[in-house]
Image (tube, one colour):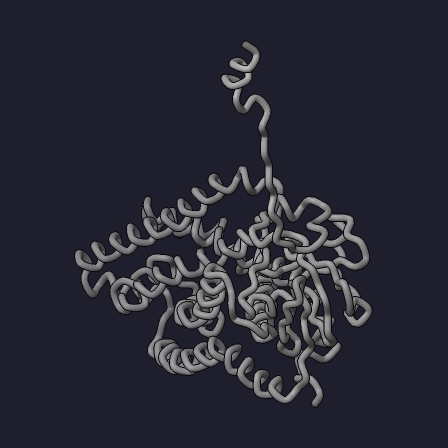
Length: 400
């Protein structure tokens, strides 16, 4: 049976460009989130300070070139990240990988109401509500959504930080700078949440003092109408269904692929010591070893950056496709010979015999070093006996 659609050559070529595009699009989104959080932190001073800072931070992304770049990055990042999840043949992942996936899929579900009520409303109804108006929406009219946005702030930040961690984990400076970066990663969302909470407290106090007159003035100033509220309510229902479907779609598509895989012959992976692992069609060697619960190093999470999952191909190398650009660059950085490949990048279509070249506990520093383990595993016994000067007292008696 022919392979499922995503394994066709055109998708294989797209997958080769996926890692750098996913990284660059993620960095663009992270830059936007960072500036947005810094903007929130000005709420510690006042909502007016948030509004003033907004001109130099968040509002910059409303200019057409930057906004188009941001939308393109969002679309590319979501498609490539979802495609990577769909393409996985094994879901035996590290806990932080699962955290990143679950948080990433939950972001559209958590954030669509906020985006709909701010940027979409601005474009459709030609309005530009001040920060104070948005805060009133989240604190007075819909406090449930206000709490949801506070949760969304944490979800988005943790998801982005895990991606940044995987990107920097193979950099030489990261081991020394990790503690400092970790402190900064905690301080920024803390200040953002503090600013958000402080600004919400301010508008609640103003609403309690000014009453309906204060709220009516804000609604009139922002240009909101009954039609805009009706539009928001209707679109919110549609987008809730759409975002939930997007969140579960990768797992549904994976199940469909499993049905196709069951009727296909699968290649065999031969390991040192004679152990054999049956591979799922289209799976990487890294996925197959994880599925078989065989420990293998992978500092970068299978992104082809750290080279800790390097293998020596003892048989079947000629049946493997040529290394893609990501794998080629990684192998070149360690001066790898022709029979070395990365377990996270190769997807055997025929039987393959391999030997891991680094131990399962290899670190990022090990990945930057050329070379690897050689030989084969054997049980050995080492006996060492040292009888020199074992009985000096006895020798002294004989001498007498």
